[in-house]
Image (cartoon, rainbow, N blue to C red; front, top):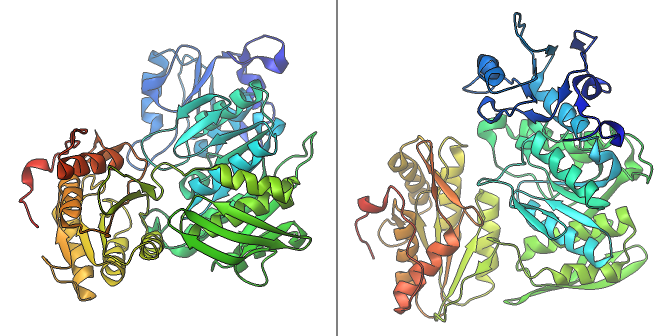
Amino acid sequence: MIADDQTGKPTSLRTIFAGFPYPFFPADVPAAPITGIAIDSRQVQPGDLFIARAGGSLDGHDFIREAIGHGAAAVVGQREAAGLEVPYIQVEDSIQAVTWLAAAFHGSPGHRLTVIGVTGTDGKTTTCNLLYQILLAAGIKAGLISTVNAVIGDEVLDTGFHVTTPDAPDVQAYLAKMVAAGLTHVVLETTSHGLAQRRTDASQYDIGIVTNITHEHLDQHGSYEAYRAAKGRLFQLLETTTPKPHGNPRLAVLNRDDSSFEYLASIVHDPSSVISYGLDAKANIRAENIAYSPQGIHFDAVAKGFRQPVTSHLMGAFNVSNCLAALAAAIHGLGVDPGTAARGVEALPGVPGRMERIDLGQDFTAIVDFAHTPNALQVAIETVRQMTAGRVIVVFGSAGLRDKEKRRMMAETSTRLADISILTAEDPRTESLDAILEEMAVGAMAKGGIEGQTFFRVPDRGEAIQLGVRLAQPGDIVMACGKGHEQSMCFGTTEFAWDDRTAMRAALSEHLGLAGPPMPELPTRKRFERVG
């Protein structure tokens, strides 16, 4: 139970609405005690405030009676409601209300932390982890909330199966736990979904970082411009952050090399609060003397006043950019010494499911990577090209109920850059997997791909990875892209346990005749006809 002003008294509905920044009715809110926030009627506990939201397929207002039956002490919604046996507060937008009410319930923890938000299409999780390690190296008591997990001191909490910012009540609960643990800073991975759905509006950002903005999530946002605008909300939120006792820099860290730079710079009202990074000579912090190796990257981070050698265990040109983003935020935004920041970068051994090597002694390289956009797939293939004189074999899919244009684009990209492309399942959801693979095959053939020679269609992802392993020759690279760290795959409306890293170990073990984990089972397993 959260206390009012640390007095030990239960939080009340009146207290939660005391600082609510939008109109609500009635203005005289009762002082009903509230012990939790719930946005799913099935998860309501006695004493909770249930917030009814209108969704894409379901409307929470239709489940108000169910929530009350589970013990909801009060209800918030945007539709008119009468005759309820608990207090009902009507707001203009209940989706918008969730984050502010959750923050108020937890005592506005973002106000007591330095909050660094990281958004972008690719590289968010890696940049978050880099910055987190830099903060630790600097002796700063920091926490991390990413799409992979939340790290609060020695406690690591799973944030869910799939890649989006946690719901607002969860975000605020994590922030409150960080305050209670004595942390002073938090790195918060912030997706376009999270920004568009206002999940982090009350988080009180001090620094915003963008990695890049490329073709992704157009199914939800409708256009690149709308997607870019959703990302841009992070930098608009910097200006709404209230003054904090420990200060707030309100710094926008932008990628000078990305096409989003001019747009994002234009929506930040104070040009002096913008810092840029990249390879562009105009960037405020840039990389020079870049060297790549299978062991990682090395470069000089150069800015006015310093030149700092940087070594990272991460691979590829895109990770130079991620390192620069983290360095810019730490050095220019938080005053971390460049040498200390470089030590933090080097301290990160890798990020789960990001260019992660799986080595069981085979005579070729096996990698699992999260690349699930056309741009990410391109840079992933270009990265591994630098690591071998052999062939590059790529296993990947394209999700159902998501941007359909990606299917063609990703197949075209792989056909153009890889030696062999194996098209397979990646969360088909309620769409036909065969139809998705057909769209991908059309893209492959448009770039000269020959089915059965340079590309294959293998519906079962486990069998697709096994095929990639069987086709590999000494010195080749087999890379499974698109799932990375994720722990499930969606068929229909069911999440099936799945981990690409386990699947790769299972395929390698079978290939090498070693004891190893069994291949995870998917609904497609029995449909596969052996190829290769």
